[in-house]
Image 1 (cartoon, helix red, strand yellow):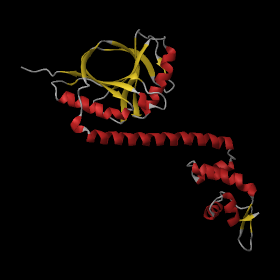
Image 2 (cartoon, rainbow, N blue to C red; image 1 turned 180 degrees about the vertical axis):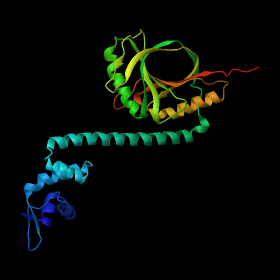
Image 3 (cartoon, helix red, strand yellow; image 1 turned 90 degrees about the vertical axis):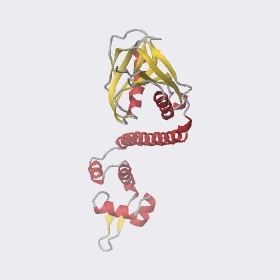
Image 4 (cartoon, rainbow, N blue to C red; image 1 turned 120 degrees about the vertical axis):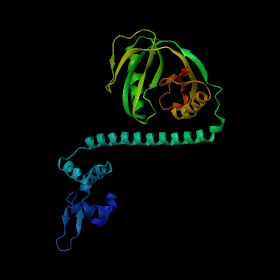
Length: 281
């Protein structure tokens, strides 16, 4: 057996932490000398201690850990919790990276605000199109990625070859929002699709018709989504300097969707329907 200081070196755990665990009855020494008060530990206790520390690092409270220790939670169960926690952390890290990219893109737009080029913007008409889509209110913009991923995975498998046009996102709502985003995601289709498709996440994909648009302004975004800030600003400047006004939701049409792990190879057409305001005489 080892005294507490020696055991702390072997277990790579602070003495103060071992004393506190003893105090709350979570992890106690094998033997405590009645005359000296010295605590003695055994290497046979290492699995139990490591289980406790692993659960603590997963963010579980000490009170919950006490219950789990009594139930003798298995290594396999802890591994499952670890994988879940790892996925949560990875998602948080990716969201923070995306936010940093957004900040960088916003600053870039500030730097280039005086030289926004509107030469690449075109005005065109859009014919009526069949659309196979799902519309949902998403908690935030990042959750939209999961919806798009589901759609790209399940819809092609349920439709005929060469039936699908480009992936299209319609941003509904009266204003831009980063929370409770009213978004529609789908594919233009060559032929009408009769049967709805229920996605694993609960969304229902079904067919509808996108009405023709007499006037649509359009530009191309190349690369990740944050490159769109400059493009939307260009569209805004074009509208402001014309005799048009926005008449409907923006569309993002993915001429080349981003491949997994490489958003920079994306090519996306951004569209705004526009109309000339009526003049009252």
